[in-house]
Amino acid sequence: MTLVDRARVAVSTGFLLQGFVFAAIVTQTPRQQDRFGLDEADVTLILVVVAAIAGLGSVLAGILATRRSSAAALTTSLVGIGVGAAAIGWAPSHPLLLAGFVVYGIALGGVDATMNMQGVRVEGLRGRSMMTGFHACWSIGGIVGAGYAALASRLDVSVAANLTVAAILVVAAALVVRRDLVVDAPGSHVEDLVAAATVRVPWRPVLLFGLVICLFYAADTGTGTWSSVYLEDAMDASAGLVPLGYAAYQAGALVSRLCGDHLVRRAGAASVVAAGTALGLVGYVAVLVAPSAVAAVVAFFVVGLGLAVVAPLGFAALGAAVPPEAADAAIARMNIANYVGAILGGGLIGAVAEGGGLRWAFVVPLVLVAPILLLARSFGRADPAARRPADQTSPDPAPTDPA
Image (cartoon, rainbow, N blue to C red; front, side, top):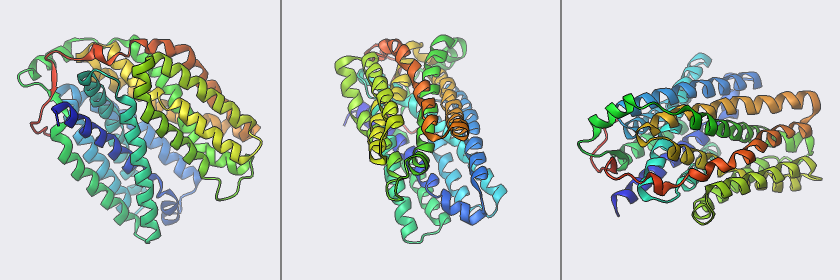
């Protein structure tokens, strides 16, 4: 296995671990509500705090990546989500639970930013599209994490034990794969630090692709948060069918991301984003006019199938649009748009649902996604071959100090 292959496995593992821990924590929400007497307003507050603090984590990760390396920042952040998960599991009171989520939120933002930094670097070294495959690993991790949490609940394993095991797994895996992450080539670290400190990050591509990321995650979060409620309240779905809206959306996303890199190599990123966005819009229209709950579930699958390529190709496009020495800082800044969109998406759909009903509320993601179709042309420069470095970076088997 070549060094680039090992780097690909290491970065894929980072994405998978992030999805695994996220699902392990989120699926414990009902048990945590019972444990601490939390109502929906409390849960909403925690989600907003996590999203907001994750933006800070993304900024801190960008600083650490510039001063050390994105490999060191990713390893540190992965350890951080493990610590946060354990703190959430063992929290004896509501305030300490919130403190645990703050720790997790900072690390979450760090992992989100740095795993995409690493993904862009590996893609550049390979010289072909790989980002949608990395994001597919996040989806796979989420499925595994949800299955693990369901099994733990079925076996009546406590939340503390459940999340502690998840924490141990993620920390151990992070320390194992850190050696294979992409780090600076020997002898180039000082020069790259000087370059990173003096090169200005161009704001135009950060804002352009940041807008795309914000719109995508607003629609994505809104769909994930409200799909089950939509099926239950607007479509009178049975209890067994209600969770399938979100499951179908994630299944469509996984299929899309598994196929996305191949499609980019054949048709180009701009065409894939345009076609995916158009398919997502068709899916949202189908959600709005669905005559039955089953039809709505199928529509949610179509939405995921279309839109899921947007985020990974957005990060790839930004990596191609800025100087290599500015890529880490640019990605960290753009990643903040992820959390702005996450906060806006769920809130906007909830506000419209309150005033006009849930069926009309799904006009919101339809409107949010539409501008991405107009911006798809900007993804044309997302050519990984153009980012293949000559002597700036290489997957180095030497250990990366996570401190």
